[in-house]
Image (cartoon, rainbow, N blue to C red; front, side, top):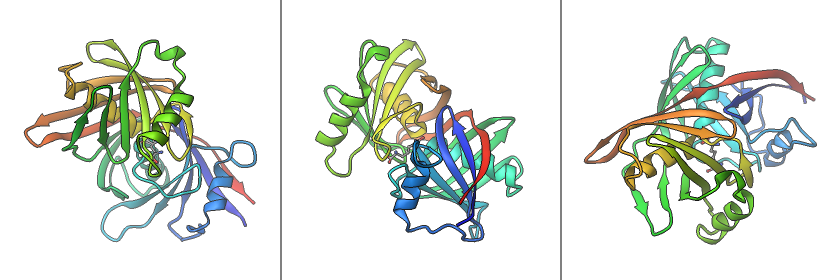
Length: 257
Ligand SMILES: N[C@@H](CCC[C@H](N)C(=O)O)C(=O)O
């Protein structure tokens, strides 16, 4: 099988990216996706993304986690596929595309991609954490000493105990300024800490606003893979006009055989 692919990263969240406009990819082959994402036996990535034709808008985004399964929305992946669409000439600087959670718009300026996320109407504030869905489900928990925190063990435990078989992504957070938060994320479907999670930092920004840790509606998020910005409007309906902004980069291209 000769399969051309591109490798992308958005603040260190990395993806195998495939132009599937001619339906070259065997979409039901879970084992192949997992193998392509395997860091020792494959290309290595947190997920795999297909760019496909769409009847009405610029393209469709199909997202698989590194375990080979289709999953919910990937914010960093949405930023990377927009950059890829521009590289392919599918768009100029503005995109409208459909992902698993619905329609998104995005703009590319230099290496920076701004992605409109879904509105968030429900934020569950529990005693020690916040849960919300920003296209993917996210547990958000404030911790001391984030750098020393055992994100893998605690993330895995929370993902499996509180959220059952469906699971959730688990974000650990420390406030570093009035509108600046540091975040480390355990991602379901990767089953490990990743360097950054786009829907995760979006969830963190909204959660920190909801529990009054910040009054800001433009929030800076520091992740191990780099910095992201999230901004939104707080309305009576919840959080609207939510944007995720940051760098996205094509790293290399290759062919899987
Ligand atoms: N890395 C992603 C989130 C991808 C989906 C997640 N692993 C899940 O299954 O919920 C992001 O940037 O949002």
